[in-house]
Length: 175
Image 1 (tube, helix red, strand yellow):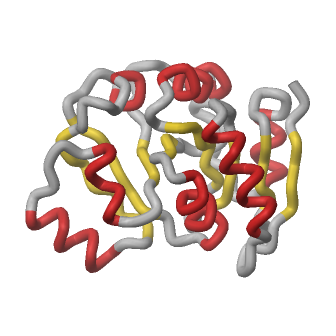
Image 2 (tube, rainbow, N blue to C red; image 1 turned 60 degrees about the horizontal axis):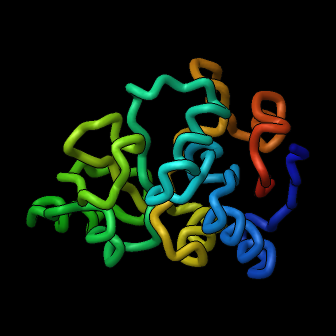
């Protein structure tokens, strides 16, 4: 497979480019994208085969759970069985941003995402490209860092390509 790289403006991501990336994710593909911390490797979190592709591309052990990214708190019910009041308070105070909540898993979330655990890690990214992608996808996105397992986390698209070129469908290069 040839990895396609699309340069996007980190402040004003092109909606057509974001829509193309969202289509890849909805279709079971892998998309690397910038977040406020590192580049993530995203797949439809509700698609078992797509999630397995993350593990294969990264060489990640299946015993290492993934974080699920959503666009807003309204999507929590898609991945969490319950949202305790304290979790809701924290989400309202700190999302969007690098806060991850660990909540009881909704049964529709494949065990591959959670390594068979009864909980799921969820966050709402603050980076404009990541937010636009989550909003456009309309599905929760499982997204660990976009690198081979145990390698340094990527902070540039070039780092993603150094590890995963040919293993992912698309890289959104947001600088």
